[in-house]
Length: 149
Image 1: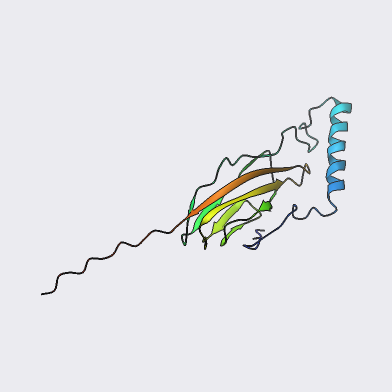
Image 2: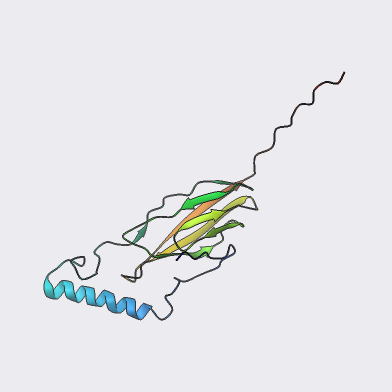
């Protein structure tokens, strides 16, 4: 199911995590115990991962005022829900839970923000500061008027 956060979202914590931090911590402890007791790596069949969740998106493309914008965030080692941790997205562009940034920017400027991704299986979260520069839209080229006469 794809949920879209409002364009002016100030969502500050991973969706669906309220009260879930204890469960995520318990899972992490269980994975560590399984690795110690059974001599397995954290990723060996216990639903645990030895991979560290991280945001792999290095930078985002610039946007143009009034022109549809689409870009996708990506992560390493999982990640189920993306959210805006801090800052402000360009007005008109929204962050969807699946990491898609989409919309039509309505105000030019430089927008700096921090996104986060949460992995429900491991309870891990990762964050990264990014920015989008919204430049002015294309200036229409005037059509020459044929000479009269």
